[in-house]
Image 1 (cartoon, rainbow over the protein chains, first blue to last red):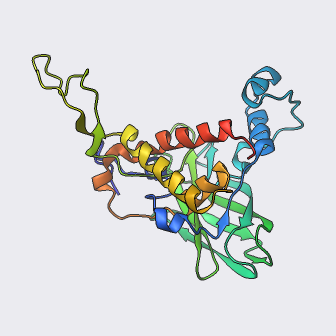
Image 2: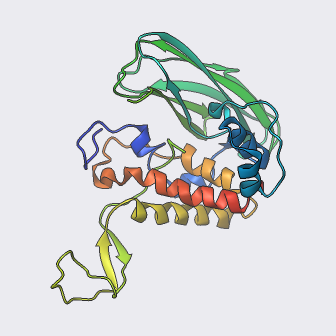
Image 3: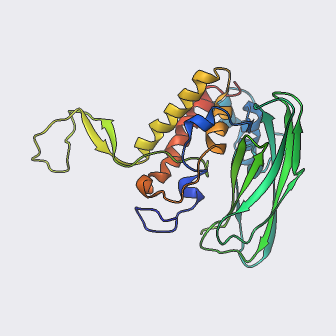
Length: 177
Length: 107
């Protein structure tokens, strides 16, 4: 896929998770929810000071430990790698909330994008939701070696209960690509 | 924060200020209330509209839930051509959504 403006190969950093689909968005099945604490932990991980955190949140915040930016409970996953000529493993932690139907089982599927050499594992690979608003956590481990330094490598994680397909792009790229 | 989402942003019929010139030419005497524009600023309101549409069905959903619903249901297209480089609407749409987030943090 090419971008019209530049003619260059287009990536997730251009088109994102895809084109908006309002009808599908009404009934997403699972969602990645974020609350105020999640945002504050994220900003703490970005070395925001107590002063700037107070300006943003309105609260006096003391950061407890450092949360990795990639573990923000966001519906897409991306990680910047420092070197291309070595093997790597990155882990993403996520929590989904069931807004579809009670008693549903979601199976994970990984779809690699064209040319991607990533190895992606999801644990657990099946989520059984008993009730609405139930939350369950999982980790996504992405590994590989010698990836293209000029273009991001990507895959998709799709959670499916047969009715809902909850898709998240996963992107890893070399610093300064 | 990327990747997030794409929305239509090329050759969009948009409101336009009659105080502004409709073209680059300083001799252009026309004044218009509407024009056809492109860019992330055109894609952004589409995403806002989708967010508002979802909110009408689910008034209790927080901004982050709505953003997740929009992103995880986004359709992959083999041809983004007609969307052109506005695919970077990404950054504008996220601006809108994160503005919501900061106004309604944790709600």
